[in-house]
Length: 362
Image (cartoon, rainbow, N blue to C red):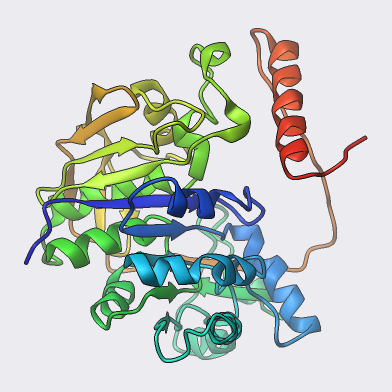
């Protein structure tokens, strides 16, 4: 029977995000799904380098002890975990999680799904021979020009294999380079039985995934409107998508957590990494972000509706990393007005987090 609503919690927005955020999402209130997004473009090349040094590596290693910590609760409460923690080595990640399940006494109980097929590194010569040039989207340079220096090559896959894993009753679904948004809208398609040509609903799911994908950015972590009055950012609550069968959804968070969810915080995240807002392309459909309607539903609740969509294109994007020397920079930039005050506030928030974790910092 179709559910009236589901709650999809964001627990990680990047590899290195707050380690305790997923556990807080599981423990602080009811959720149906926990979405964990570990991958960025640079992350894939880092993981590939790790795997080249040790074939057993190449995935988000902190995901494994996390699963050891929360897997008993996940199984007991019927929560499903969807994570792209597999990086460039989903089988290695799966095996490590299965070992955690064994240690927890859940062998034969916890079902771990794994999705492969995004890694096309070994297929590049074959594709070039078939006339697939794989030109750079920005420079139009053909892949052949840098083929001998390529370190990793991964196609962005969509929600279809995730939905299939959920249909096979996986408690945990581990992917490689899926799109960030698919980690959220796959759950909506599965639970509500949407057809793959229901483009408006799928577009709504894409928008939900875009809001969820960066963790606490949507709950006040990346909002400069009235930023001084966003409370308790050191214990910020991560967003939760409360989704409905018609494609509408509410962005919220657990009660009693820090941060804030209002139209301004959600709008900030909607603008994140935005190209053409009328054509946000994924493997499963194209969302028109100019059709989004936001309204405050209650405190820390923003309702999203009206999203329109279109069919997917006939191509997938491929992320390719290649060796081109070394460059390392690290900055935290705070803009006018009140740039110094913002930087001081960030310093205070980080120190409070480290104090809570028992870490020292000079």
